[in-house]
Length: 122
Length: 122
DNA sequence: ATCGCGTGTATATCGTGTATGCACAATATA
DNA sequence: TATATTGTGCATACACGATATACACGCGAT
Image 1 (cartoon, rainbow over the protein chains, first blue to last red):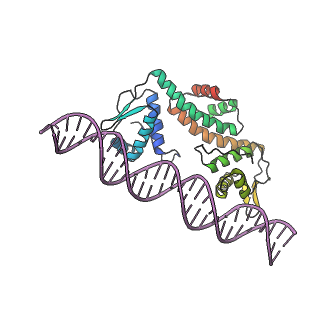
Image 2: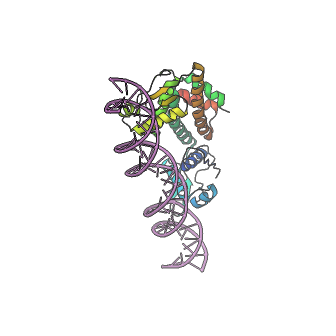
Image 3: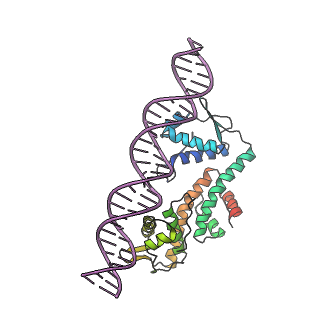
C-alpha cells in the first residue's frame, strides 16, 4: 500500500486512491492474483473511512483491474502486458482529451503546449 | 457572449463560464473597458440562474480580469499584451502541473506524453 | 454442524458545495 | 424625485463526499 493522499487536492480521496492503485497495477507493480489489503486495514493505514476505501475498490472493479470475492477479499486481475498498456493508454488518453480542450480554449497550438510541457516536466 | 455550456461535463457551470470568458479576455477577443452583459441578460442567454452567472463573474474579478461597479455593470480590465500572456501562461501552467502529475503517476516520461499528445491533438 | 473470526456489504447520517428564486441596495436617467 | 436598470444578499433544495455502525457471507477450528 504505497499510497499518498493529499487533503489539499481538489480530487476526492476515493479518486486519488483509485488512480494510484490503477497506475500501480498497470505499471506491473502489483502482480495479478495477488490480494489487496482488507478494506479495514487499508482504512486504518490510509487514515480514511472504510466506505471511502470501498468506493475506490468499486471503481477499480468497474474498470476491470480487480475482482472481489465476498468474505474472502479483493484480488488483482491477471492482465497480459499488451492489455495493460492498452488500458493504461485508455485511461491517460481519456484524461488528456479533457486537458487538451482546456489548452485549446486559450488558443494554444500543439507546439506551444509541448513547449510549456517541456518547461515544467522534470 | 460566445459561451458553450456542457451539462454532461464534470466541471461546475460557473467554472465553465469562468474559463471560457477568461480565455476570451486573454486572447484579446474582449476589449479592455468594454462591458460584459448584465448578469440577468447573461443568465437568460446561457439558460442558467443569475447566481450562477454572478459566481463566474466573482471568479473573474478575483483573477483581476474584470471589475464590478454596483448599479452600473461589469467591465473588462485593461491589460497590456505582455500582462495578458503572463496571466494566460499562469492559468495554463497551474492546470498543466496537475495534468502532468497524473501522467507521471502512470510512469510516463516526457517523450511518451508528447507522443500521445501529438496523436490526438487536432 | 456450528461457532468464531475475518472478509466485504448496506443503511443512515452529517457536512460541503452547486444551483436556484426572490427580495434588497445602489446607480443612472428622465 | 420617480423609475428602470444594475449588482448584492439571504434562505432553500439538491447532489455528492465522507463517515460510523450494524449486517451478511465464507472459511477454518472445534
